[in-house]
Image 1 (tube, rainbow, N blue to C red):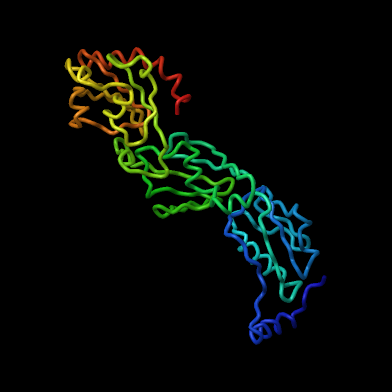
Image 2 (cartoon, rainbow, N blue to C red):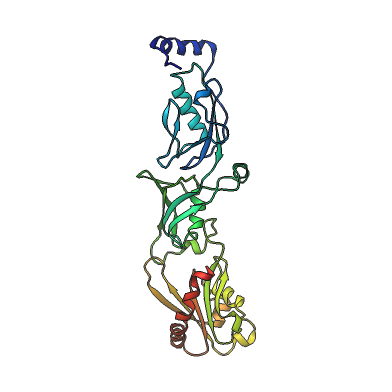
Length: 324
């Protein structure tokens, strides 16, 4: 099929205006494309531009699809409707009124780098659902928030007002509470509020992990409760002790002390705080717990409690990754 000459370029806009006709673009779901996705392209009045059957065109590693006669068309990072409009625009060189339909046939996994104030920074992979239809029903899978969850969720020092998405060298700060699609090669950076700033420990968030692991040891606790304990974010010292079996009048008597050992996730600094068990259980000194906090109950002095922790912590640490 030959390109239209300059006379057609000058006549067609006026004709379309008179007839109230615009290039036809089929409907599409708002789904952002990524490398190795497959899209079906159907040009109703130009079969030579269409993809073959359900195989579709593959979005290459460079983010483009190759369409016969049109060449490489940028696709990664675009929604299906945007790609339809781009194809329709280019096809006007060959077809007066292009009728283009683009449909996502299959989705690939996407690899995204997540760094900053998350529990497991690094490269994460978001797997596609079994079918595209499933994705349409349950909503987007390949998003910033899902990538953060795959990285273990945000730490309590995370600044949710400063989550940035970097793509092709350009970094954009996301509005608070807004989730957006990601494609392979994206980078996500979650800023920190700084040392000792644990606001997320007190605030519910869909980006926080469902559970955190703390380590409990000491006297008058059931032997099967000593070690890693899974609790929900926002759990307090009293809640962890109760979950570990520390309750009842006998537990509160005797002047027992609780030592909370914490390592700041932003700088690695280790601190120890000591409280009477009775004050913890009655809420006077009942702190919110963070991931990897260590709790030691001791009938002696607080110093002995920290010393006891230094003995058992090397035994517990190999299990950290097993229980996260």
